[in-house]
Every structure is written in C-alpha cells, then in structure tokens.
Image 1 (cartoon, rainbow, N blue to C red):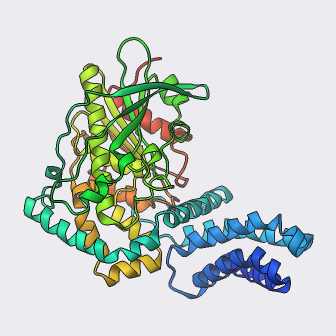
Image 2 (image 1 turned 120 degrees about the vertical axis):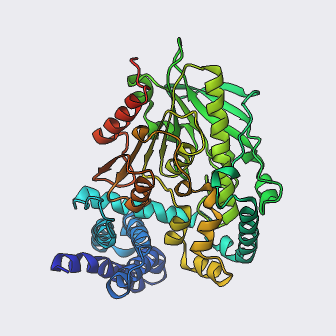
Image 3 (image 1 turned 135 degrees about the vertical axis):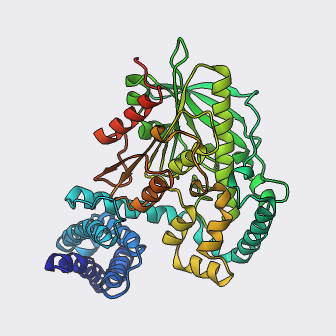
Length: 470
C-alpha cells in the first residue's frame, strides 16, 4: 500500500477525532453539534485501517462525512469560524476519500474493466455509498430483526411448498399467466410541461392460496391498485418501450428524470410506459417508497417480485391486444433491471430487453448491506443467505432462461457502482450467454446521459426493429 493510500485512509480518522475533540471542548452544545460526524468518521476510519474490511463501513463513513459538511456551517456559531471551516474542508475531503477507499477495496470480477480513478469517479462512488446507507436505514432493519422467528417459519414453509409443487426445479411454473387488462381507468394529467396519461387499475395479483405471508401481502391495501404513466404519440401505432424504475422511486417526476422522455419519446419517437412497482410511489405501504424491498422479510420480497411481473405482463398484453402491430421493448434500471431480467424469461411478447446496473440477486444484496444487528438476529433464528436465495428462486432471473433472442438482450453497467456492484451485471451477462454488454467508467447513475448508454440502447432497439423516425 502506498503513502497516498495511508494518507487517504487516515484522513477520516483525523477528521472524526477533530470533530469529537472540538465537540467535547465546547461542552453540551458542541457535543450535539459534532458527536454524530465524529463517531461515524472515527469508527469507520479505524475499522478500515485495523480490521478485515466489511464493505458496509464505507456507507457510514460517507454518511459521517456528509453530515459533517452539513453541520459545519451552522457550527460556526458553536465552534467558531476557524474550527468550522476546518471541519467543513476536512469532512468534504473525507467524503471524497470514502469513494477512493471503497473502490480500492472492491474486488473487480474477472473480465470487468478496472475503475479509472478520478475525482469525479470517487465523488460519485461516495454518493453511491451514502445512497445505499439511506436505503438500508429506511428498510426498517430493526423491525425485521425482531420478526426473525416469523421470517424463518415462513421461509421454511415456503421452501417445502415450492419443492412439493416443483417451483424450485422449474421456477417459471410458479408464475401464472395473468388475465388481460380489460377495465382500466385512464386519467389525463401533466407534470410541468410534460403531458402524460396516468393509468390506474386493480392489480388482481394474489399469492398462491397456501403461500406463507399471503394474508399480510394482501393487507397492503394501496398496493393492490396498480399505476403506470404513459406517453403516447398521436397517429398510427408506434413501438413501445416499457421503462421500469429503481428502488425508492415511483413518482412521475423521478421517472421522467431517469428515463429522459426528451430523448426516448421525442428524439427516438417511441411510446413510453412507466409502470410503478409494487409498494412504491402511490402503492407504498409505509412512509417510504419501496421500504419492503430488500428488507430481509423474505416472503414480502418474493411477492413484490412476483406482483411486479404480473402487473407489467398485464400492461404488455393490453398493448399487444390494442395495438397488434406494435413492437415492445423493456428498459430497467437497478431494481427495474431485476424486474426487466425476470420479464425477459417470462413474457414472450417482448422484442428486446436492456438492463442498466441490474440488481439480479436480492439475497446477496441484502446480506451484503444489512445492519449487523439485523443479520445476526436472522442467523440466530436459522435464516441464512443460502436458504433465502433458495426461497427466492422462483423470482430469480438467474434461475430462468431468457425467451428474448440473445441479439436483442443488452446490459449496461458502471465499473464503479457501489449500490449494485459490477458483479451483479457480470453474473447476469454469463447467465445470458454473454450478450452485448457495455461497461462504463461510472457508478450507479447516468445510463441515458452517457453516449455509451444511448448508443447501446439505440443499437438494441434497432436490432429488434423498434426505432422509428419522429
């Protein structure tokens, strides 16, 4: 390890210690002002230097640094201007250092390009770490730990049922073909200057009668109503692109920002359908969109995946029946990439599938990021990553073979992604028999804002005959 690495690794330790010393020096007001960034930076920094590194420490190092930057300005009145400016600069530098350290510690899978270190890449990697920490902390991790015995019981009962029905050996047989979408209510609305249709209909999805967790899932009233946002060109039928969002999303503003209708709808001339995933947006169960996803509550995660493909298959079937000449492709990012990969193996109406930073292994993602107190409680009651992965097999893209031709499959992934690491895209690439894949020097953001991303999508759409002139 070089001197540069040691200096970078020591920086959060020194800044964290500085926060704590100044906090104690200024008494009770100082403690309130500086204990959080101090503890997080010092604790995560020392763990990185002295212990076998758990990747989760960088999530909390990034949070400590970000909180330090936010608190430094008002702390001018508590700690004084010189100390506050010093802590502001130190916290900002620690945030940047977090990105460097996280990328340095992240193993690069064979065949994946090495990240080319830069200030911008390190900054975005640190943002990814903070984003992942936010997802974990808003997934009710302590509640999951307190329900560990119930989760284990449901998981064991489900695996027995799935094995008996043959759903572990043939995961596709777990999924019933949904009925066509007959009665839908379309509401015309707008978001700023962007006009779109808001589709609302009863999902109709229900877990199998014998499935554990069925009644709890059906008790989520708002989730039983499906929503989607639609942008359609007037005139003759055009190809459709179904755009599936990531975790914590579900609003039209966020969906349009992510999927860039200025490019997809106006420049490429595509009709767009943006479905809202279960327990997201207007379908959310609690105060946070998507808080039942990746929570460790196994059957909730399974039913979310199953309902997602059920709802979107109904919408796709509706498009096929109402516009029989139209081609249909699907584009999914992050959690949406997981759903798109599932649909690639379950819906033969799709002409092409493109996924960006796909989160294809929910069990691995949970165990890699869960709070230690949660994972300890689950293991104590017999819930392991292996058993969770087996239970989720019916909704695993890695247990199913795609129905879409390999020439019409595409994967786009950031080599420095710290939310869904490059290993996820790499394993899907191998599982799909190595279709077109584009690695870019970036993190979890930026698919349609990069020339590589737009080029990959355009080529995939053209291969499948979806590109039209506006």
